[in-house]
Image (cartoon, rainbow, N blue to C red):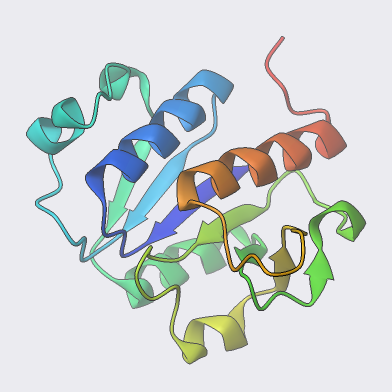
Length: 152
């Protein structure tokens, strides 16, 4: 299981997601550009005290990420409020990449089109979305539970 962030806007959310990925031993990908100067200083300000323990790979853009992900033949599972499959009904594979969009814009249409699957976290009626870091934690926990991928 891996997690990828498409052009994230908020350093604090990235720090929280990278901390979650580090705690669960899950590689994380940052698809640039970011809405903030990405680097050690930004992560330290975000409280990312596990930065040295996170397995982070940066991609200069969507095309570079797609080339990389195709090499491994991994599925890209997009978390979206416009998802077709509710999270509890989706069957994860151990090699899936969970993709989350930017806080301000999500992902563009062309990314939706090439995602292997689109998944939504069910919420009460009248609520639009969860914080991206909260969504990442919820989806990652469910994916690891299903694939028995939690660390020992």
